[in-house]
Amino acid sequence: MTNYKNIHGTNIEIVSSDPSNPVNGQVWYNSTDGKLRGSAVSPAGSWASGNNLNTARFGGYGGVGIQTAALLAGGETGTAVTGKTELYDGTNWTEVNDMNTDRREHATAGSYTSAITAGGNDRTAEVANSESWNGTNWTEVNDLNGTRRTMPGAGASNTSAIVFGGFGPGPPTPLNALTESWNGTNWTEVNDLNSGRNALSGAGTDSTSALAFGAESPSPTKAFTESWNGTNWTEVADLGTGRAKSFGTGASNTSALAFGGEVPPVTAATEEWTAPTITTREFTVS
Image (cartoon, rainbow, N blue to C red; front, side, top):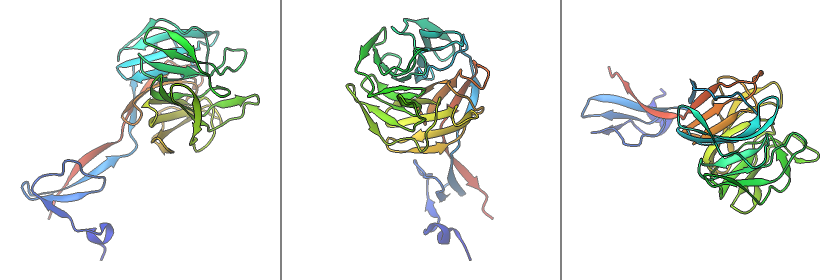
């Protein structure tokens, strides 16, 4: 007969208090409380609506920071490319000093006081130049190895970041799955996304833990989400609504924001990412 030991290889542990760090699927009997308990992970996470941007825009991939302190730079309103930089305080967006060069479809990573942006399109051609944000202004630094656009970035600061996916290097400009790492001086290719895609978005506060979500190509717009662990990409829960060219920011597998983009049409909607959580479950013993 199949029982717990046959499945898991051990008997149910009898303990006087609940484990402080239970693993997914662990079951134990609490002799003090007289309760059979177990832990389970909610692997999917979830998205919920949040406050919108002041102005609908897309194509920037220029959001960095956390849910209560985020930076947004660049993008397109639908009629023009912009270099606007805005700060998010957890509730509202406020404009601060802008980028030196208007651009869209560029990657940005770091924090709201220390960030790096690279690549993109000035609405006439792809670019490879990178700019560093010091909390007040943007300054040009060393560029990507080749021109690239429509890819997001993730990282801790203007000295540690990654960019992934998009179009390029070009010309030509193929759909790609490239992931590149920034060390404060140069860009180097590391392990790529599982599949090439275009106009996706991303989040992450360090270069070893990132979130990639949405896509325009392959069409139609996608809602799927992938998690980066510093080595590989793994699929997790999807966005509530498929979208492309949106902005993203946050701490990847702990919290994130997805805002703006094209569904189509252009949207100002914001979604919040909640990380997978481990919960303790209690069972009745008869």
